Length: 287
Image (tube, rainbow, N blue to C red; front, top):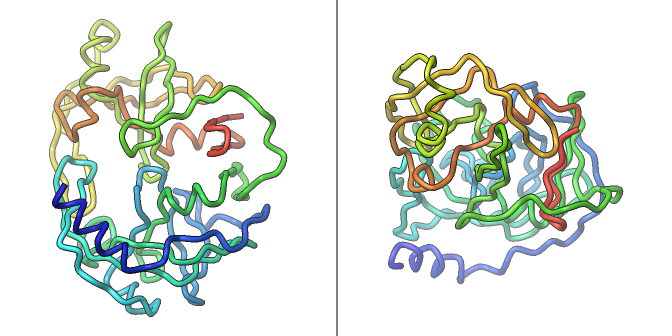
């Protein structure tokens, strides 16, 4: 509670985030890996990744200076994907523009440039756009040709299959007859399955090889003993997908890794010709 109070007290000194202009827009993704998009922050160009696993947008000290943002210290820490706690600072961007959409007073957590993964990224790409901005844009849709849409007006209605575990968006991963709770994380390049999966499906993993794998979070890496299966056939967002290889951790990484079954990353989503995340209907669709 004290940790959260420091963050909220700092945010309370700024206007609430506001969606000034939201309209259907299309931009082209940068590169062929994650969801890196061209944006404008305070009138300056940037190319940031879009991360459904981020509760706040994030960037670095040098980027905050380049973008003309005032940085303050809320005396708070944030948990990362490895279960560690990392200190951060705070800044608020006056304006974020992507396509024809404009969002004002966007909060950013500010990290050191020498922390992972930022130390491996070029300048102007050391940042990520988190859930508050994505909610304001209503929906995200991208295809295998690199086109990315916001606030799409032609999403057909359908059953909800997104929900929240705490602050993390989650969905269902089908495996055999089971429907399993997994986090939906577009900031993760690969899919990880967690100890509950290893325990429940021990028979299906009997021939998997055992390895030590590195798991990365902001500012920290850890080594985790894992099982590596050549492939597993799963279902996500209405589509059957081959997870190849399938990495199953045998030890805890963060708190969710003991209750959820894994984290669905971009390696699964990238196997579809088109992906839609609709926050109005709370729906994930893979085509």
